[in-house]
Image (tube, rainbow, N blue to C red; front, side, top):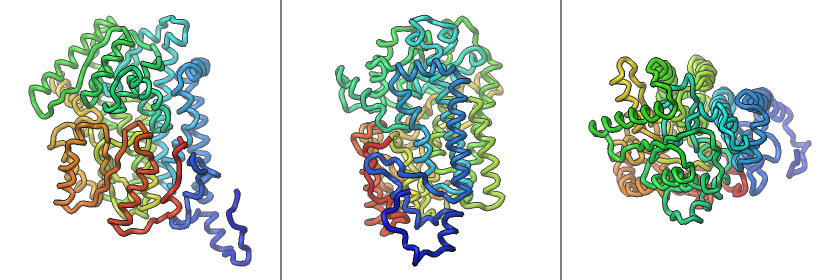
Length: 542
C-alpha cells in the first residue's frame, strides 16, 4: 500500500489505529475516493472493512463467486462452449471478466449484515446470466458449424420484455432465453462501454439517433451479427414504446425465421384492452404449439406460477421491513437490479436459493434491531427509468451524502401474485402482468400510474425523490413539467438525473454526481460525509 504522506509515528494513536484495523475506520474517516485510480475508477488496493468484514468479503464474495462462476460455466454448457462464445461474441469477455468489479462498485462501503445480504442478489443474477448465455452457446449454430442440435430445437427465443412466464407451460421440456437480456441489459450494468458500438452500428444503416438508445442497442446487436442463433423461432414485443417497433422489424429481417409479435398495449386500465392482451397470449401459445408440436400443459403452468408467487410474497415481506423499520439489510442497487431481473426473467431455482439466504439475514436484522445503514440522512425513492450504465450511483450517494435509496420505481412494477384457481382468472392476471412490463405501467401508463410516486413515497417513508430524466424517452419528457409543479406544490425535495439509459457518452457518471453534489450543497445546505467522493474521474472505468 502506497502512502501519500510519511507515517507520523510520534503522533500515532496506537489504540485508535488498532481499533481501525480491527473494525475498519468509521464512515467519516474512510475516504473511499482515495482508493480510485484516476480515469478508470479501479481500486489502487482493496477496501479495508475491518478484519471480520474484509475476510468475509474476500472469502464469501470474491472467492466464492469466482469459484461458482467456473462451476456455473461447467454446469450450464461446459468450458468449450464458453471459450467458443468468448471468441465469437464481443459482449461476453467484456462483462464476464470485470464482473467482480461490478460487485465492488455495488457493495462499496458496506459493512455487517448489508455486506452479507446484498451480494446474494448479485450472486443470483450472475448465476442466471451464465445459465442463459451458456444455453445460447450450447445451442448456437454459429458455434457448431451451422448444425442444429437437440438443444437448438428445445430452446425458445424472445424479446427481453416478453415475460418468461409466458413459456411456463412448456418449461418441463423446453428452455426459454431472452435475446437481449444478457447481450444488452446485463452488459450495461457491468461495463458502461459495451453497447456503444451497437448504437453506432444501427445509426450507420439509417436509424435516426433520437429514439430510445435501448432500442438502438438491441437493433445494433443484429446489425453487427453479435446475436447467437440458438432457437427455431422467436417471440417479440414493442417493449415500452413505439421506438422499439423498429427493433422488432430489424430483428425480423435479420433472424429470418418464424416470429410472433406480442406487443404491450399503449392503453391502460381498460377492460377491453385486458381482454385483447389475454387473447394475444392465447394466440402466442397456439403459435408455440404449432412450432414445437408439443401441447399446452396447464399443470406445468400452475406449478411454475405458484413458485413465482412465492418469490413475490417474500418481496412483499422485504418491502414491509424496508418501509416500516431501519433494519432492511439490502442496498438500493442490489434491491433494484435483482427485482427487475427475476420478475421479468421468471421463476428459476437460483432465485429461491438466494431468497432463502437473504431471509435469514433480514430476520436476524429485525430480531436484533440491526441498522445496516446508520448514516442515513434522507430516505430516497428513485422514480422513472434508471441509467443502466450507472445503477450503482445510489451506493456512491449513500457513502458521500447519506442518501439511502430505499425503493425504486422498477421494483414496484409487478406488484401482484397470479391466480391459479381457474384458467380464466389465471389468463386475466397473466395479461395484466404482461401489460405491466418494464418501463410501461409507471413510465408511460397514464397519469394515474405515473403519479403512483406519491403513495409509494408515503408508504416507504421517503423524504426525497431521485427523479430519473431519460433524455430520449418521449413519454417521460412529456410530463417533466407536471412533476416539477407537483414537487413544488407538495414541498418535496427532488433532484433530476439526466441520462441516456445505456449510452454513457450522452451524460457521464461524473456529471450525474456533480448534479447531485450541487443539489445537496446549494439546496439542502449539507456537508458530504466523505469529501473524497465529491469529485473524481471514472470516464474510462467499467
